[in-house]
Length: 424
Image (cartoon, rainbow, N blue to C red; front, side, top):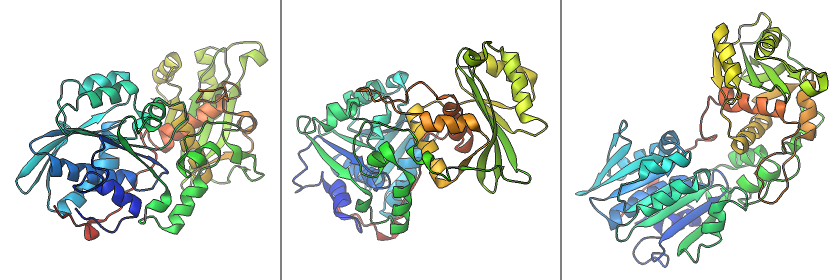
């Protein structure tokens, strides 16, 4: 098999299983490292080519956190490439599988999402000849282990890829640290391993992260979170004045609290940038009196004024407050996406790219940015639960309104259809 042009590391991923390869005796491959290093694209192609080189009339699984992310990150980028190589691909969207054929051989690739503990039941009962787990570190262990248990056919292999998380993560401990024991080939990728990435784009991604996320997603290190969550927000130019003139849209994000503080942010859209232009912050301990759902709703009305707000997103655990907003009928209310670590990564990127900006009159947000820190206890992978209420509502805004609840922050595919050649 020959595919070109690719980097040396990508070629190793593409050919490790082929006849004559010194790596062909491995039972699994693990690829981790930097974002935009091309590992997902190459693994998707390699997985399908291996399936046809070693099997026929067999079943395989391609898994990610959700079906949507399987399609966006794996199957959608590789299908045109496979067709360019001469494969026939028939996709059954309603039943979530691909029927792929090549020169008289046919194999079926089932798509699965492993977003929570209940997902393990989705993959039970099927017999597989191989499984690819994209962003395996984001999936629950129960789902991953159930997927591996389904691979009972002779010659089946496991394919893993992910970006690094914290060093106490089960996948790091059980698979990466024990790769030799598991008879798994371990490859670490950096952005330099992706020749399709221009120097300008590479620099952009390098500048997108700082602190823990820089070490994970640029340097490719499994590292513990420590220090300030948003260290770059201590710059003098981190906050701005409220822009003058009209805004194109308005939205509100809410971290609801009765005993704990409640924080609501009012956001205005201008020239593709969302500005946090005002906020409501009520600390019942400081004020000496708790507020009811209706009183917080009145505060929401006061924050919004006569503006037309398109959406309000609220902490999903605040069911009673969400119901109050719905009952009054003025605002469309959305329960917020509440993945903490992934949400912080998105907020960090959105702030550094200038897609969201915090106005300096939002004093409680400014204060919390300076105090918001990672919990440095061993095994902890979350911020300290203090000075985090404005931080939470900002995160709800970014994950639920700015990115519309997407389950993966970046989507990128290199089009290599003109330069790919498959030789069996």
